[in-house]
Length: 143
Ligand code: DQA
Image 1: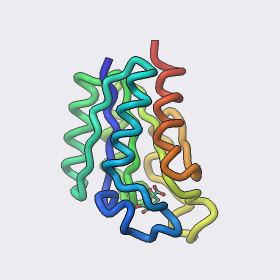
Image 2: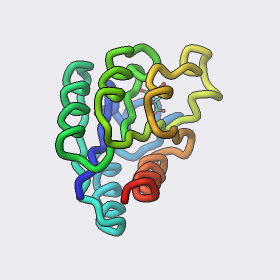
Image 3: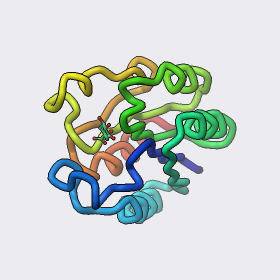
């Protein structure tokens, strides 16, 4: 069973980018942790990152065809993208929204998520462990 873990803009900079907020782990570290956690949960993890909104949309459509679920950190597109909301609504596999930081404890413009109404649930604020928690959430809701 394959699950997609999708990452949006600037997450390729993880480890270098505002480490006080996002921590020192690189995205490759997070990928390795997700693959290991997936192995325990019975998931093959297909881990991807793009800085481009349309690419993320294509991947959500692809997940609708071949994945059992999706965990997505949409980065700043979380707060802006009706198109991502619509893409998530267009597929029937469960999607979990996740964030490394607690977006609600940060700037006002991060308090609203365009995609939250389209997803199954939201995990935020646990550092990069949010990814692992999202995989557990997917495990608990997929047969
Ligand atoms: C983020 C939070 C977003 O507000 C921000 O734009 C990001 C990362 C997080 O994982 O905490 O790029 O999604």
